[in-house]
Image (cartoon, rainbow, N blue to C red):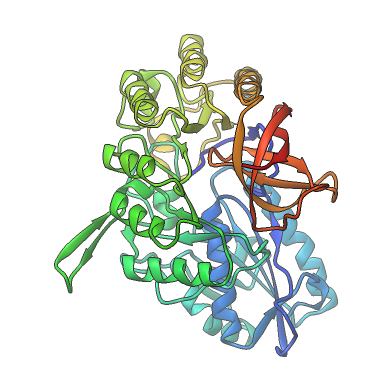
Length: 475
């Protein structure tokens, strides 16, 4: 999904990319408690909900108080060096908790677990349990092994694990929005990316279980679902009973048909795989949100080839034009890397010029950080000085700030359908929600009989770089 380096982004009121702590789940019928923090991409947050379900079946309840936890888990991200450093610091802090309560077990999950298992277990002795992204079903037995004094380790990758039969427990949920994982792994060997090595090969979850999960979430009152995958557009599943295949456009339509009151989003798209069928399906259904995350990484064809992105600058621009031809109101966001191996000043300027063409509403922006085991680490020298990377990243961030501001300025006077997600962070006298284009909109509660989970029509009166400001109106 996202890529490498020290990150900077135009911030909004979302929680993407933050560590979070899971809340206690209802009453306390459990005699053992687990505490979990998740870092990195949305897939990790979704995986933590699968882990919570598995642990609940074994008599563990969640807690937000780390000191009372019998089991402390960190769901990790290996995508950037900074993320790994943050996680190491947290593990060290948890280890000090363990000194006060020796029976507590500490486990590391996810991408970093697979990549650094030996170091974390033996050299640094920070954890008792190491579980890779495809081995969460084995967590209960690994906890038993660790409790008996053995190291619990399972980082085997799978060709078929999708956790399709596990009903995730919606932790830290606002009760309005939820993630649904539709596939795992990645077959795109982008040279900078560690994901294929930590999450394995691509495999799609069966469509029946995906739609059943969405239907159940809608019955529970959820109003927005985000379909998740490393590359959702390459979703492909064979229904052997009907001898029919389901591609992403067809799955997207099935999801939209659950209810017109249920919004559907998806993330992430690889430019090479998003098809006209997907775009026409998005245009057909009002409840499929008009926002596409389309990572470009670089505006230079030469650098894109080194990254093994399999498209050129011109091809990507043509894809942008096609999106806007079919859906003129569609928002586009992106990922950008500054300072990839051998990047020249001309390459960097091409990235800036492509951003101007793309007019991204938001971007996730990083400077390149070599990740061990990737194709880039094996083939290329990380030869751009850090001060140059940081300067180029700062220029990218500054430009994206201007593009985001210009995008928001154009929304002045427009009226949007907004799904209310809760109180604004700054004031409980204001609601915050998002429109179809995934822009946060803040508006006063006063004078309107609205509640969380309602749709409201909001006219935009003002804006900041990250947020639209408006007033609810009757339509």
